[in-house]
Image 1 (cartoon, helix red, strand yellow):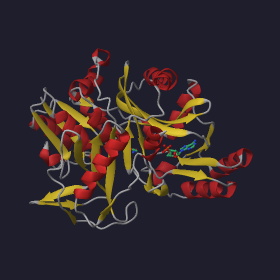
Image 2 (tube, rainbow, N blue to C red; image 1 turned 90 degrees about the vertical axis):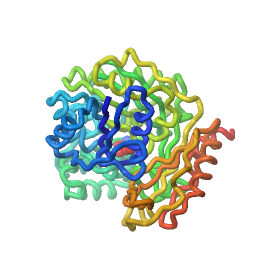
Image 3 (tube, helix red, strand yellow; image 1 turned 120 degrees about the vertical axis):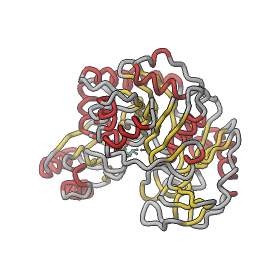
Image 4 (cartoon, rainbow, N blue to C red; image 1 turned 135 degrees about the horizontal axis):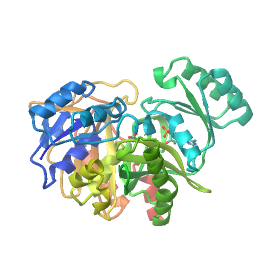
Amino acid sequence: MNVLVIGSGGREHALSWAISKSSLLTKLYCAPGNGGMEKVADCVTLDSSDHDAVIAFCRAHDIDFVVVGPEGPLVEGLVDALDNADIANFGPSKAAAQLEGSKGYVKDLCKENNIPTAAYGRFSDAAAAKAYVETQGAPIVVKADGLAAGKGVIMATTVGEATQAIDEIFGGKFGAAGAEVVIEETMIGEEASFFVLSDGTHTLPLATAQDHKRVGDGDVGPNTGGMGAYSPAPVMTDALCAQVMREIVEPTAAAMQARGAPFKGVFYAGLMITEQGPKLIEYNVRFGDPECQVLMARLESDILPALMACHSGTLDKIDLKWHDDPALTVVMAAKGYPEAYEKNTLIENVDGLDTEEVQIFHAGTRRDGEDVRAIGGRVLNITARGQTVAQAQTRAYDAVDSIHWPDGFCRRDIGWRAIERENK
Ligand code: AMP
Ligand code: GLY
């Protein structure tokens, strides 16, 4: 069969790499793809927000299945358009993508279904939001309701900071995403991400991961899309995973179905493991980036039947095998990221590093003849498996050190929390 992957990040390279190994695959296309995906697929220029153009491409190239990687096209309803055109696909509808598209939507869903999460209030005007902050006190978390590229969350340590955040959000700092504000109690604990496939009726747990959101070693500096990740998350024992399925994931899938927005695709729960047990921080309606890279590095089974089962409603027939070995990925980013950075810098010695245990997934790269050029903020994902997280980390940094890219940088401590646990 012919498959089209929508997206151009490290997540989509990892997905394409996994799909390229499928026994069901005839031909793989990526739109728009990147300098790494060219090795496993035909990269084509397509504007994913032009649904008619995507459908026309699928018809012209006999595409049997479309995999939508990023949240943007999901929230914009690409899957609905494909469904209407009778083109099989992987990803939630626009209505189901509200699970990521609106924080208030998720909080209400949790409240109605007794899903453990932080206490909260939803506000559409600044005065009411500020009054709520006054009664709750600080620390407190202020969030823009909509998609804000991971930047719409302000952890306020004082009432003054919270008030300022409320003014900024309603003042338009995050555009339409800030038409509403959600204010939450601050939860304390260790964070983990829990990935699940869903076909609307059945759910299948995939794996857990932890990422590193801050730009600097020791988890300092501004938030980013993620500077590295590993899987599994050691904090997630089998008992905790079962509890998360029972108390958070299954009630969510059932609630989405009851709301007439059955969730098809992958979603992951951002969890806080508190003293009272696991609580939901937020949902994402797609694979995490870079978490997807470590999941794909650990997946032994053919991924394509599992993705297709999410569409056909047959996920209960799927059983996935995973490497027991952990995987770890280090993000190499352009110097300056997450602020301004230079583009078109040359990356050398990046080809030929892949082995059984090491994969180099590209994100913001393009090929220019023989040259590989950096064209984005997050640029490469150096991914490795090992018998321990420490071994995976050593393998990943060995590969990092053989890449020549003077204009790039990475954190040097990816996996520190898991390795500290291994050393105990
Ligand atoms: P979100 O985009 O909602 O996942 O928030 C981004 C990050 O902010 C999370 O990964 C947490 O580190 C932090 N965060 C969000 N909400 C809370 C909360 N209620 N309590 C503590 N930390 C939070
Ligand atoms: N790494 C976090 C995300 O994909 O949103």
